[in-house]
Each structure stands twice: as structure tokens, then as C-alpha cells.
Length: 369
Ligand code: F6R
Ligand code: MG
Ligand code: MG
Image 1 (cartoon, rainbow, N blue to C red):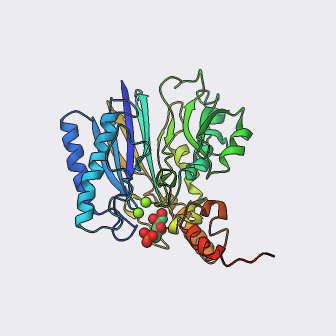
Image 2: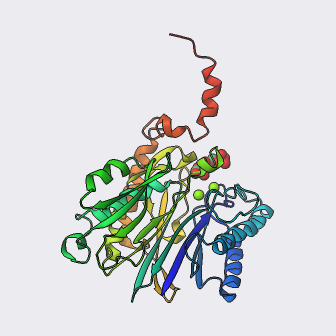
């Protein structure tokens, strides 16, 4: 059976500040998606929050970029924004950058990761959600899961994965894409995705001829850049991703393993700082310290004819306690730099924050050397 999984998110108001989603917004979203489920527009759904982002996970048979599904998500965000405004939540309606829906969510503010797949005999899928960071934050962990044999044992010892994977990488500045197959193009791939603010992994496919070839992508990441749409700083992109596991894809544990390392990502306070990404349980996806540190949560499901059997809160595990402790320690170390790089982002990346407004005033005071 062909199923589409759509994970669509937007920050439509924080509670308080930019920290979490108010329960009333989630309740409203659930009501509306329950209605859509009764009308059979969608098969199933799960609503949650990650930091200040409202998250709608939906399954359906309408394919990727479906006008019906995108409009449904837009309507949910639009409707819940009314509540956000009543409660005077912070930044109510922030990510709804256009006044009215026009066919597709592209360029409208909300972020989305969607995959149309052939649902296998058994289909484990993981929904990753991040707050206070950008899409490139997925580069390192996804690379390790799908291309690093020191992370993923299956790349070495499972014949169905031995042929590797194809990475679709987007240049989000020049709006171009390239496909690179691993292991052959491993170094080329790293040359690009190491520059994570520009080159981002959009999709990963099984290698041609391998077990899951033709059954849809193995992973997909939301790559919407808010500042590019709005033309000014409106918060970081707070990306999401969907990853399939097992039987020719990396095992669940191989998908989760890279997150044991709290790598540095950009975002955090005012979208202007480098800091560690902290894997947390759903209930702890609540960035507080210096509006962070950036968080990632992972919800696991089994698909059953499009039904979402789950979630299992995958980072709600003492096995990740040490990672969280390490992340807290790195956060402390980075914070001690205050406004200095490399805690603060380099100038090129600060272009998309509120710093240029400060610089404008200063510029006039400069004298020639
Ligand atoms: C980062 C983020 C927050 C805000 C910060 C200032 O993505 O959302 O760190 O940038 O709280 O917010 P304003 O300018 O709305 O007061
Ligand atoms: Mg916000
Ligand atoms: Mg956010």
C-alpha cells in the first residue's frame, strides 16, 4: 500500500516567550485533525509540540505536496492562531507569513517533511523534531546513520545495505540540488554537508538495486529557510525529519546512535549562537536556558495501513542521560564566551539576524584609515 507521511510544523505563538506550545493550541489542532480523520481526508495523525513549534504528523494517500493536506495544515495553524491571539501568546501567528493559502505551503512559513512510501511488511518510522536551530543540524547525524560504518554496523555486515545510499543535497543559497551516492562519493558529500548552513541533506534513498529500491525515500528533512521567505529575521527554522528503519534501512538503534553525541548547531538565543543539540523526551522539549540549548526529540511509530502505532518517546531513555549531561557541560562552556565568536555566529550568518540593524548605525561613525 502507498502511504504518504507528512510532518508539518509552525511556530504560531509561544508560552511563555519562545519556550513551549500552549496546550489549548494542541487541543484545537487535535479537534480539527480528528474531524479530517472522520472525513477520511487523512488516515491518522499525532499532534505535539517541540519548543514553541506546533507539530502535525499526518498519514494519508494524497502524495507529497498535496494541496488538500497543505491546506488542512494551514487551516489548523490559522485557526489555532486565533486562540494564540486571544491568550496573547508570544509571537502569535509568527510563522504564517502570508495572508491566505495559495495551493501549497512552500514559501508560506510552516516547515514540512513529507515522504510517499510503499508501506513494507513492517514499517518502523521515526519523526525527529528540533527547536532553536536550522535544517543543517540534521547533516551530521543523518550522514552518520546512512554513511558512516563506525556508526552503522549494517553498512558493513548487512548485504541489503552494503550498496549504500543516495543523498540528495540542496544548496539553499543558490537553490540547486545534487545527488551523491555513498560510499563512492563519501568525500564529495562531506565537502558539501560540512558547510551545514548552506548545503543540507534533503532526502536519502536506498541505492539502486538494493532491497528497498523503489519503495520511497529512507529519510527526508524540512529545508524551509524562514529568513529567505520573510526577507528578515523571524526565528530559526526549527526543522523536522522523517526516517525509516530496519530491513535494509539502518536499524532503529543505528538511527538513534549518532544523537549520543551533542554536536554543535547554530541557532539558540536569537538564532545567533552555536551550541550543543540536546536529545530530550517530548516533555522536556522546552528550551529555557538562554532560550535553549537547542533540542531534538524523536518519536517512534510503526505504520499499519497508514495508522500511526505509537508514539514511543525514544530519547526518554537513561541511555541518553550522559549525552544530556555532556550537552549541559558544553552549553556552559559556550555560554562563557558571551558575545564572542565562535559562540556567536560568524558575521556572514549574522546577516540574517537583527545585528545588521545595529551595524547600520555604527557604520556612519567609521573614519577612513
Ligand atoms: C530563537 C528565538 C528566540 C528569540 C529571542 C528574542 O530562534 O526564537 O531566542 O530570538 O527570545 O525574541 P524577540 O526578539 O521576539 O524578543
Ligand atoms: Mg517562537
Ligand atoms: Mg521554534
